[in-house]
Amino acid sequence: MFVRLGLPPIPLVPVSSSQVIVGCVIGIGLYKGARNINFRLLGEIALGWIATPVMSGLLAFFSLFFVKNIFNIEVGHKIAEGSLAAANIASTDGDPAVSGIIRVLLAGIIGTGLLVALIYWLFERKKNRELRLSEEKFWKNLK
Image (cartoon, rainbow, N blue to C red; front, side):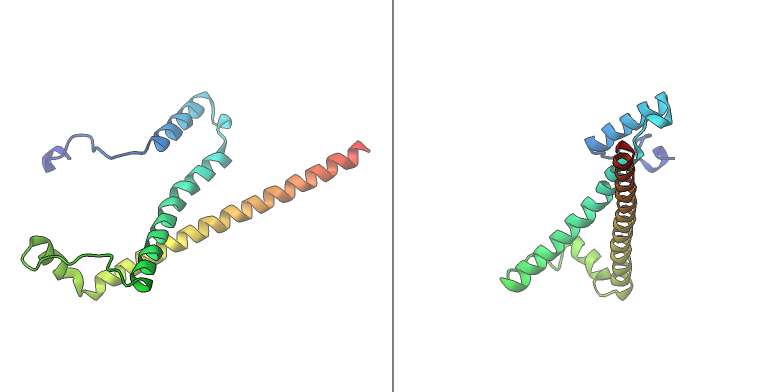
């Protein structure tokens, strides 16, 4: 399928080294038995993989907004009228459907990030409550 499109037979996708290492550790854990995998730690890593691009995108957006509006510095550049890229951008520049799609995508990304953060917070709260009750029970039985 890929070869017919002029692409290599195996798609060459850049993967970060942290994803490779975590994938290897998960594979070894599955080989030795799934109970050897620390799913809580994997959840934290996955949350970091999701939260990092979202937070960096928001930080970049607000930084550029701040630089542009406070210091009146132009952060973008205008494309020459005769270039091919200008023709491609001009065709979607005034299209309200494209900006609507981008708004929906951004809202979905932010909503997903907030939902994941809420779920993580609830699980951490439950874990801390169980830990506190366990400690209280331990000290009560020790007396």
